[in-house]
Amino acid sequence: MKRWVSTLLVAWFAVLGRVQAEFFTSIGHMTDLIYAEKDLVQSLKEYILVEEAKLSKVKSWADKMEALTSKSAADPEGYLAHPVNAYKLVKRLNTDWPALEDLVLQDSAAGFIANLSVQRQFFPTEEDEMGAAKALMRLQDTYKLDPDTISKGQLPGTKYQAVLSVDDCFGMGRSAYNEGDYYHTVLWMEQVLKQLDAGEEGTTTKAQVLDYLSYAVFQLGDLHRALELTRRLLSLDPSHERAGGNLRYFEQLLEEEREKMLSNQTEAGLATQESIYERPVDYLPERDIYESLCRGEGVKLTPRRQKRLFCRYHHGNRTPQLLIAPFKEEDEWDSPHIVRYYDVMSDEEIERIKEIAKPKLARATVRDPKTGVLTVASYRVSKSSWLEEDDDPVVARVNRRMQHITGLTVKTAELLQVANYGMGGQYEPHFDFSRRPFDSGLKTEGNRLATFLNYMSDVEAGGATVFPDLGAAIWPKKGTAVFWYNLLRSGEGDYRTRHAACPVLVGCKWGQVVGNTLRDAQRTEEATRKNNCTSIVGPGWLPRGMDSGKGLQ
Image (cartoon, rainbow, N blue to C red; front, side):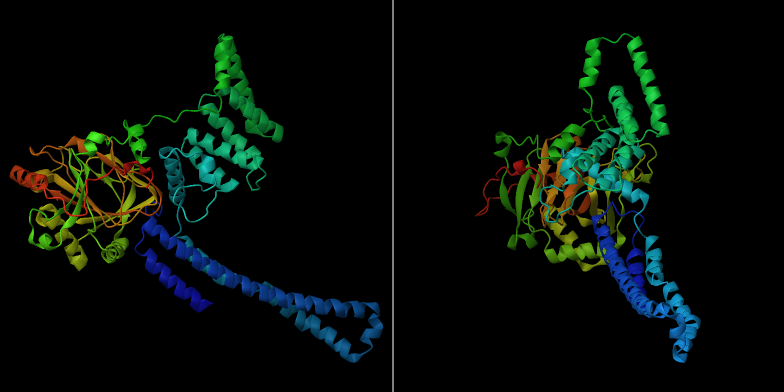
């Protein structure tokens, strides 16, 4: 067992040597936890086998001694009259029983505990658990899922059964409560009560749930229901000191309301509104539009616009490499022009890119609009790595392919960025071009002219790239790439290209982004002309049909 444990620790250290503290921001890194947990289960089973073997020996000894003592105790003098019995009694008490004591005191758990203790320092943290809970709540809001649906695991595209227990739901509610998010606290604590009322067992009690729930609804302004829930809590636990104090406080507030002579109609109105609470307004003005597009709703692909979208073979302005093997090009949007290219990367290239990117994955950052300093943010939940052409031949090959397709030189391209999204992974609406006056790189390197986005995985549900100002939604398709220009001919930013990566509901999303910067206005003119050139429609490629109405793909 010691050899197995040492092998396990070496392998686990090798994995964790490249992993940073956060796990929830990358499904790719979370897969390492699956193997770590599997190893722990194996270690635990080995401990159980050793413990069972020890208990088997103890039980065998106990059965043997029970039979012997029942016989000897029936006639002690007659039993000890035999000198061999007398000798064996002395020997047992002097030698055998102390040996049994040593066996019982053996610490069979030492190997398992040592293994667990070493690995625990690399386990997910409180931050990870909070991040994972927030991710579920983000999915709940974005895709309009009620807690019961999530608790039962009834999500589209799933192939594994997964449910939340009473205690899991209580953990969700408590996480929301600790963040001061009383809206989600109420939703999840009500789910706990629902499952408890249905007879599900757990360590969580109704009194615990009512304690959180009564205070949360009070914070949401529902005094009447807070009072009712507190009374229910005291009926279950009359000695609950905090509930007793809260009850007196709530009754005092209610009396003050009555003294202010609220009308009966108003009081009735308050009563009828209980348990119905509005989701708080947040910092993102286009939140509703953004989330509806993520659900496949509100896509503004009108019949008139659809007639302007085509499929064709693309030879990159007669690029020699593409004349023989042109790419399939599909219009996703007319203005600004957004196109998708098919079969841009093979499965082998995708797996190789993921393999070399995974050890370098680190939490994706954003630039603070006030200070210009790079920092992590809740509105960007993913991990990224940056790959250079020297890292592997496949990187240079992908860069050359991007150059052939777009007509843009890799000399002004940024490093190839690989992104892996975590639980509910997202990047809320943002621009790919810089609008910051303190960005010194704009003068020397230029602004980001265009974005070339490779999808390296299919996503079972969610994960669309949406453009709120356009009403456009583009769904991930493995091996395809989406391309658009971020700047106008003048070199100014095209504000219509504000876009977002929707939360991944089910699946593991890998993407690869190459941004190309602009050195001068002449380059914009040249690149735009190349992008606007037309190609003949090849055989088998008909005008594009509407496929964005599929919902969560």
